[in-house]
Amino acid sequence: MVRKLFENKVKEHQRGLVAIIITAVMWSTGGLFIKLISLDAYQLSFYRSIFSALTFFILFREKVFRFNWLTFANSIFYAGILILFVVATKITTAANAIFLQYTAPIYVLIFEPVFLKIPMRKINVISVIICFAGMSLFFIGEITPAHFEGNIIALLSGICFAAFLIGVRKNSSEFTLPSIFLGNVFVSLICLNSVFPSFQISINDFWMVAFLGIFQIGLAYALFSYAIKRIEGVEAALIAMLEPILNPIWVLLGYGEIPSAFAVIGGTIILATIAIRAFFIETKP
Image 1 (spheres, rainbow, N blue to C red):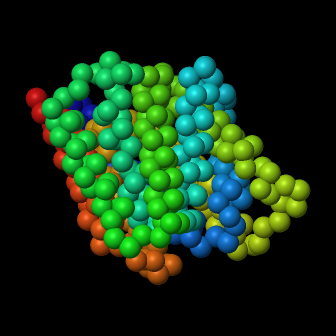
Image 2 (image 1 turned 180 degrees about the horizontal axis):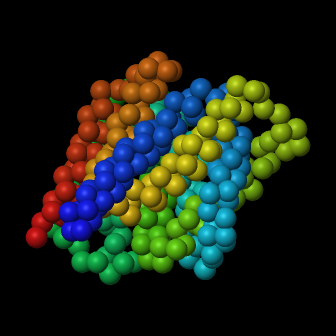
């Protein structure tokens, strides 16, 4: 009986690992499709979020309609993540956009003591300093005004991401899915003017935004919700690092965009610091 329970637990853990890997791979496709789609950032965001909201409604039904005041605040931050990341990816490199968005955990470490009353640890201070050093490399070398603007927008996306993470932790877990669902609804409303009144879209763009909405956001978050209940938080955090690693690789293979050496070095510093810090905190007795 005990052996059977243990085997079931191991199988559940393995399913969770597979689910989080698939999730990270799905998330990582965003950069390539954003580059390939001919729609502008706001048109793309409108259609992607329409598909995503519909997917969430079909998958979770009444669960997406549980609201409190913090749900609405978190949904605004989530809408900011989606729109700003698409805008950034359109005007700077995909590597810059995803690496700079992944500075979010650093802002979380800075503002946790203020909003979540969590004491600042020495390792957090060191992590923040190292990551800011890595971040500075994105603004070194021959950088065009468009890339500079895109980098700033990507940083803002990371700040929205951090605010969303803090807000979700401050709120009850039952309101996480409604925050994501409502965030997609807000994106559609904010970007509605970009497609009104024609709503014209090519077949090629249509299937790509449908993929982004249904798989890259909708089903990916459903898998993430499944996985996070079956694996440790540090496992989820470290495996999720596949997203920023794979994102620029898909863009390189499918779009031919080559990230700068400074971006690769800076991104490596940021991701490695976050990964080591997560592992150290989670495994320290």
